[in-house]
Image (cartoon, rainbow, N blue to C red):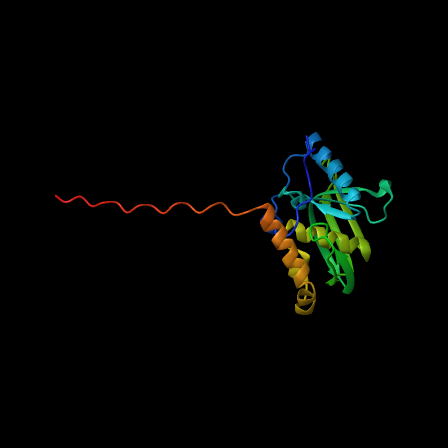
Length: 188
């Protein structure tokens, strides 16, 4: 059912949309989560949000340790109790080759559901909290480039232009519509 899914790259406009809540917890949702975990691992990531596949639903998967037993499917997340602040390097599967220092809360609480609709209530610090915040940003249409400072943006301008050019090549704009001919006025 989800065999044709692929990670989409910046500047695809679907990455900048706010995602809608998941309303149905069924086998299809569990299958989507499982497929997302496969794609995340294949891309050597630690998190992947549904919008990165062009699916604007509030769902992400993650694994902070690399141990398959630590795979998580997170549905309709809410973050709270954001405390502290720390800078750390982040990358993004939708912005290949980009690595930047991003300021995030050090501590966070996650309220969400798993793919079966069971509630999740977790507290984390450091790396796991950073992953939650990064993926939560995706659900709200926020990318790393939106969090980068002016210096980082200038340093990575060439990479961003390359991604924009590649996207434009793969998604050319539609040809312009022919101009409408002026209507002749009837004389009465």
